[in-house]
Length: 186
Image (cartoon, rainbow, N blue to C red; front, side):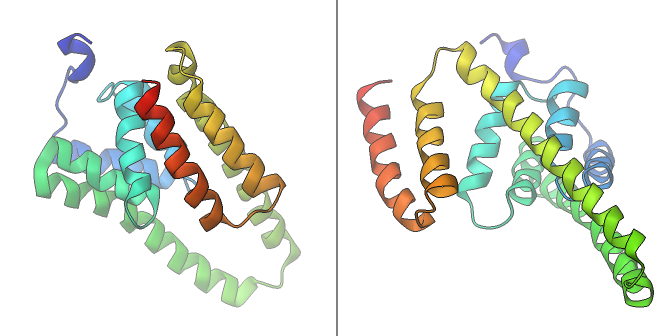
């Protein structure tokens, strides 16, 4: 990769990090990952698709919610501890405030059928965005000719999603297999 592919044209300030993650959190109620990728890779150009996938992979490995971990990893990359803090606060503060208000609203108006229908619509939109983001994240893998990673992911999906095998057992089997494959077949 050339240096321009690995470094952003503009290094975000702490204020830009905060406002970007506020925008992500307000756009991505129920699923912020698609909006984070769109903002960071597509709109701002702060990361390449491969860099985003690598940072997100690290975020999945860490304990806790993936997109929250990602905000800390991304923020620290561009602003150190202060960047991690402002990205995290930008991501978390708006949804916490909204959920508190929705909780009050639900307490008083939860029996109204239209309210339940609206929540169902929001959930369906979040699933659609997540599927679209997964497809975008897979494109760099397929373009590079990598088939082992997607194949292992497909096996995991079938084992957990369709065959209903327990997640710990699938991880216990597929983790060493995928490591061995990566070791032998770079």
